[in-house]
Structure formats: structure tokens, C-alpha cells
Image (cartoon, rainbow, N blue to C red; front, side, top):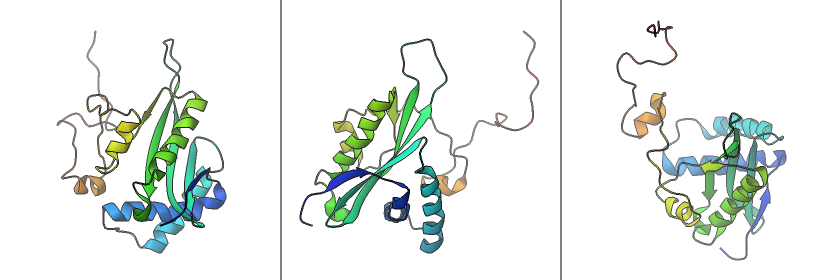
Length: 185
């Protein structure tokens, strides 16, 4: 590793390299269950369609003529409210830096770019799910551990299996099922 890195906004033409970075990121965490070629084809198409504009954006870190990292941001519109909150959330995901470039400021530069876009768009709050390795970076930017504010129900056993078991709602409280009769007031 030598030289400096630069950050730029990704375009539709970057979908293939972004898909490759996504594969590397997730394969470092868990053994893939999908062949690389199939994943890359599917992910490239997905990313290209999202980078045409709209609510998804991505940034790429480059050095030595190649992509060394990326970060994604989804803007999530909130319902209108009469209070003081802005009416957008940001969801930061798939922040990845190649191992040989970690701890060199690349992740911070990528996060800074995504947060600048959030500020420019009028985002109220930004959420993310950190890895154990990345949590300290996010804390340096002011993210706080807020376990009471974010709740999650994992509906698919694929991810739940890697987390120690599926989450299940209490017995008799199955969302999306039969219509229930509400008690009379």
C-alpha cells in the first residue's frame, strides 16, 4: 500500500466494482452460500438500477488505480409530522475498506462523504448496523449505541442462523396473518 486515496460519488457505471466490493465485505464475515458469479451478476444489476438516481447513493474510495472501498446510503422518507424533526432518515450500509487500506483514514473519508450527503438532503437521523471492527469509527463520528431505540425482527432463518437463532414474536402475535377482531371500546 502506498499513495493517497480519493473519494468520489459512484455512478451506474461503477456497479460491477461495487458488487465485487460487496462480495468481499460479506465473504469476510460469513462463508458465501451463492456462487460468486451468480451473486456478482445479481448484485451488479441491483446496484446499477439503484444508482440511476433516487434514494440510493454510493461512494467509492480509489487508490493506485483501483477501488479500495465503498459505502452506501439509502434515504428513507418519513411521514410528515408537525414537530421539529426533519422528515428523512439515512441508512448507511455496506461500508467496506480493503484490508490493506484499513486504519489509513479511508473508512472515515467514506463515512464523511455519506454524512455530508445526509446533511445536504436534510436528514434527521442516520442509522446503521456496525460490525465489531467498525463500531469505534462510528462512535468517533458521534454515533451512539442505542439498543432501546432500534428493534429488529429477523424473519428469515438464513441470517438468524448466523446470529444464534431466529427471533420469533410471542405466541399468538403473528403479524401479517389472519385478520383479527378488535375488542369493542
